[in-house]
Length: 296
Image (cartoon, rainbow, N blue to C red):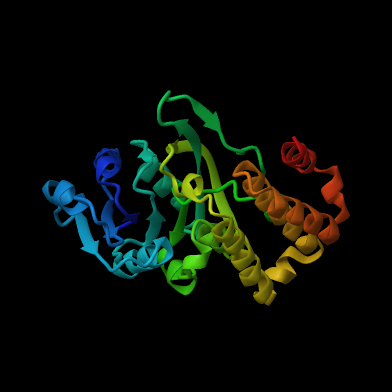
């Protein structure tokens, strides 16, 4: 079997059926689906019952966050490749076929990278995501240093590599666990890319990155992420001279999130930390936009 699509879900009974229907509507049938229910308290299991078969498996686990749910699905997978797909997003019918074609073209490499767009859940309007980078590792690293432009949906990892490089199962890292993994994988393997758009990330108010507004949780998430990066010597060597710039960018993004949620004192604190980390913070448009938001 070529692909196992692992779908972690938590209280998405009102969204997951639509996602699953799109997943099953593929032009290529060489895949299976494993849904890992991360301790939902709604009627997710009831909604999914009519779809369960040898092709679609369902497992309910104790609530452990997405990293653990994805790792559990990876362990159960029969596919040669793993695709962690979010339970509130949309897969186009060519997704599996495109991934299989890309894998074959590059002699079944460690990591595949398709493209996606962001779709507004209300209006249906789509927004392109950065896709103009080359296949070169240096160019790809430069984009990831600026922020996490990837998502789980377009990244497909060979199973042996996924098992050797699991998601970090730390609740404090929630919503950044994928970013940490992409950097860790990029330090080791080339990402073989196709420019074909095969999925949509659906933007809605319930997305975890939109509901995380508590200043302590926001701060903890970013600092935990930076801690794991700092403790990974191979990753620090990969970032090399860009390491302090990378830390600065994360302080800026944290300041933006804090400012947007009206935590002004903390926002100022991380703007100052960004400057101390790398002086080019003063040249960043986001720095001045955030400062203006904090002052006004």
